[in-house]
Length: 111
Length: 116
Image (cartoon, rainbow over all chains, first blue to last red; front, side, top):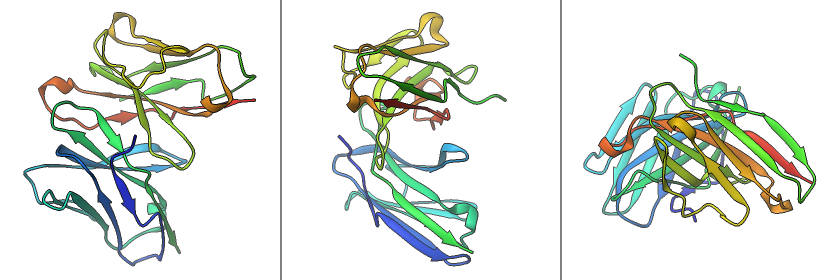
């Protein structure tokens, strides 16, 4: 079963625009991770945010976490065509390092 | 540094046939995972190893699936016999010792299995 639900399911934007994807989950977590998957490089880890953190940055990525709402968002600024991929959130529960993935958001960046 | 290696990349078999997937994790990573990813879905964990020990195999369909990680390095996942519903991408991932904290997982390219 999948805990995380990404929203939207698909997103199409122009190069240079920002892209925001949201993730909601159901149970308490130890951390939440975002991964990217495209046909060229497979599934790649982007960023990890722990349950006691509220915001984290990595290059053009900004992740927020609201544990009271059980939600997270991933912002990609100044998008590029190479950002075209599926983006998954994955949650790690409080009592183990089992990652549970959502169904993903398909992002298409048009040049 | 080499990433997670998986083989084969693609496999087409007829139903009821056996199939095996092989994974070599990143050197030094004690934790190894097998996931199954159906089309349009995120990966779902099948089994997790800490060294040679399978510490979470609750999602592994044990009637037809088996896995082993001899010597705590390479791992093999087997399906026997395969069913049409087993068509999916099988992903292997590894990470540093998860017992000590939360680490990112590094994924291999996967094996795309088609059962006809």
